[in-house]
Image 1 (spheres, helix red, strand yellow):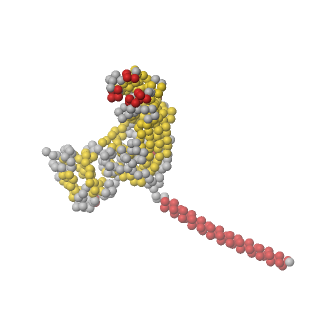
Image 2 (tube, helix red, strand yellow):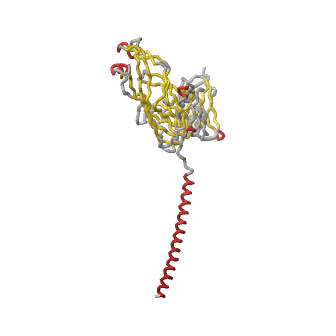
Amino acid sequence: MIHFHFELIIFLHLWAIYSMAITFDFMLLQSSCMKKLFTLLTLMMITFSGYSQAIVINAGDVPLPAPIVNFDNLYGTNAGNPIPGNDQLWNYSSYFGDTLITAFYVPETDPFFTSNGVQFHTMVFKGLTATLGYFLNSEIAFLSSGIYEVGLSIQAAAFSLVPFTGNTLDSMIIPAQKQIFLSDKTIMEFPSTIGSGWHSSTRRFADFNLTVSAFGLNHTPGQHVYTTVRSDTIVGWGKMRVYTSSGPSIDYDVLMDKVHEYNVDSFYLGGAPASPFLLGAFGVAQGQHTNEAYFYRFNRKGNGSYPYLASFSYGADASYTALADAFINMNDLTTGSKDLRDVDYSTLIFPNPSNTNEINIKIIGREINVTDYAVIDLLGRNVQQGKVDNSSSGLITLSLNDNIGNGTYVIRLMNKEGREVVVEKVNFNRQ
């Protein structure tokens, strides 16, 4: 019995040592696997760290706008719809309209507004009908949490109602007024990135006095009350390239903001809802939706980004497909590098000066596939553009319109990627 007990003890002792060895080997194997897994994850992190990262815009990325901002209207250029998505390149460097629109962003000094965080105001039009409306100053505040419209001011104005009533004595008089909203309109929230979204509903009003003889109204006090509803969703991020007078811009980091905005109108006279018959005479109705707008805004990260780098408007088209207008912010643009360097080739333009409508451009030293051209005047307006059909020989002949007057113009040639490859000045001096 003693012998058996001794052997059992030895057996149990050896089994414990064997079990510890197995456990130790398993731990070594597990440790090895963990090291391999850690190494793999590290390599993956290193690999993916080179990929583009989603763009985030914070308050520091959006400075106050310049007092004067010029916008290029791309209407009629067939610029095309931008496509939402991640890590996109929206290239509009070959599109330039013939109409420049100037917007004014005036620093606010009125304590009524500055005490509520307002830094500047800009003028906007509030339309009631296609032909009737009034101008107001939109009061904008830049805060660490976002950009907001917090109030409005209206200058005194008077409108004749002859187009509606036929009576020269009928009028609508709007006194000077200003207000701070109970709930702000959100233009942009910080931080914003792909998937961000915000919504605001803002009640506002405009007091007026109405004279309409046919309805027995003589300077009757009234009020236009309306709610502005706006919804924003960031649906894309990436790079955007736009036109500059010196060639394609650099690629800007942008967020693509999908916006839907509209107003709901109400009208009051003498403290009561206005008569439907009176409103019908002006072509308006209680609860009507006005200023319905669907648009994309490309918010640029970095200096000069307000109010946007590019805007694509679709009017009342909720499908965002029927492009109605497009604008590019021309302020603070930087020209990017070209696909081809000037040292690689040279160009010869003749005759110059020219007394005819034909211009020849010879590209020497390199074969370049030119597909498009544009003629720009010294004000930056696009006076003619089109396709190039005979670039394979290196000699390009452009036939210009008769309505291009005498003077100096810039000829731009672009390749199939939309990159500018030739810029030459030409002078027309027709007899």
